[in-house]
Image (cartoon, rainbow, N blue to C red; front, side, top):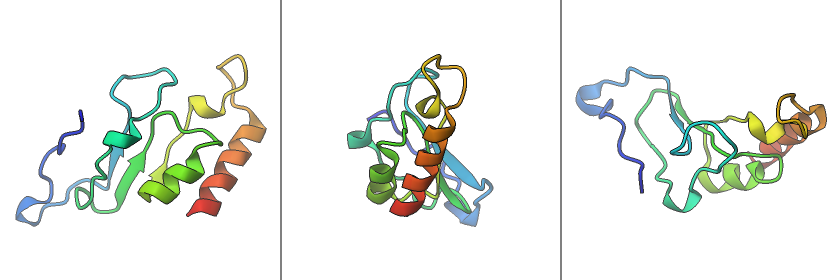
Length: 102
């Protein structure tokens, strides 16, 4: 797995970040975070962690149930066929599916 403990922000009682963002290894595009290799970053921040990387209205519910992130992040997973504009229905479905799984 490529995930390494980012920095030991917890040692000596220090938690100086609010959230840790966990995304796929490659920047940009529409690939998905490797769920099978994901190690949930517990205790590395004050408020929790953000899951990103390939989330869509179709898989966000499973992601929330399986990993229980504090926040989910989406961009390309809710775009229209052009890949440039957000699709209002997909955004609404993403939010509804994330909330219902929480």
